Length: 61
Picture 1: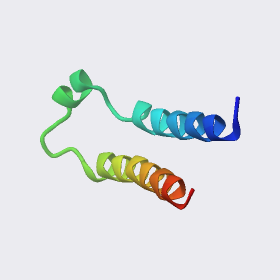
Picture 2 (picture 1 turned 90 degrees about the vertical axis):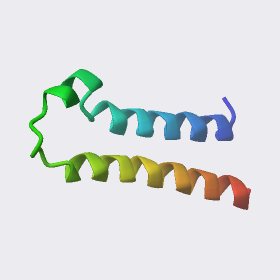
Picture 3 (picture 1 turned 90 degrees about the horizontal axis):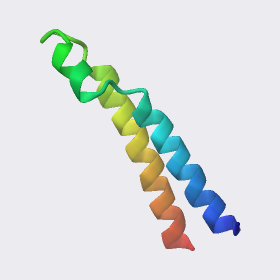
């Protein structure tokens, strides 16, 4: 694998791991209405930041 492919796989793995920690659709439906959504938002923000940094890295090339 080339270094770029390794980086792509690393980003995919990191984002997949972050998203895997989030509750699934069925789990979300069972959460109480007052459930703390801040933790969910934080995990999504972290995944977003990983993707943003990856895109910035590609643009700098």
